[in-house]
Image 1: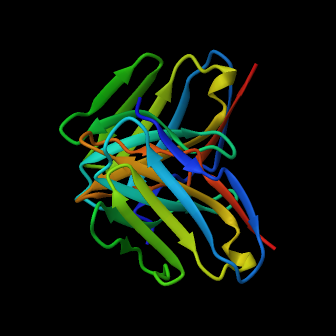
Image 2 (image 1 turned 45 degrees about the vertical axis):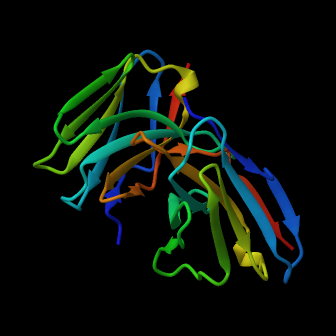
Image 3 (image 1 turned 180 degrees about the horizontal axis):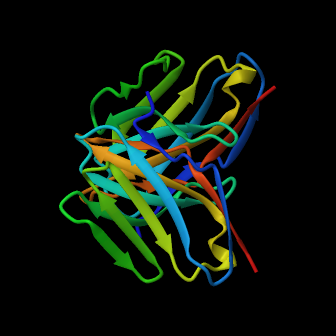
Length: 110
Length: 114
């Protein structure tokens, strides 16, 4: 039962442009959402989060948007940099546990 | 941010043997620790959740007798893969959560069973 879905397995963007990664969830009990960045053979690192009481959270080049009615969140990276190339996981949390999406591999081309 | 370590970072073992993976929160007390497994090009799969001093809660489909989890202190959780088989080969990642909501992940352990 995939409660968190990232439908795009990969995304390629040019350096300096905007990267938009999308995530959908099905469980209305989720109330906290996070994005993690992961390099090969390493554990995920926390990037940015958003509570369900907000619809936007910004941290430098990273902005997360939450649309509760659509059960959709997105991560915007602008401007994208080659060092942003990694796999990005969205995660949703509620009632103590956390579920991850399948990940989107972002490639930022110089 | 908070630091979580895992040991070993990689291990090779023979079929039928057991291997223990340690997860430590280095600068905070982790009331809850999670163990994940990641197959190549797939998402993180939650295996179990453990709270300090109590038995772990396993996800459906995860054999609790095969993947033994111990969370004996607020800074240490261990995952023991018993009677390992080649299909247990994977990347195992732990995470820890303390007073704050975010989970902090360890660097992962690559297990190869020959």
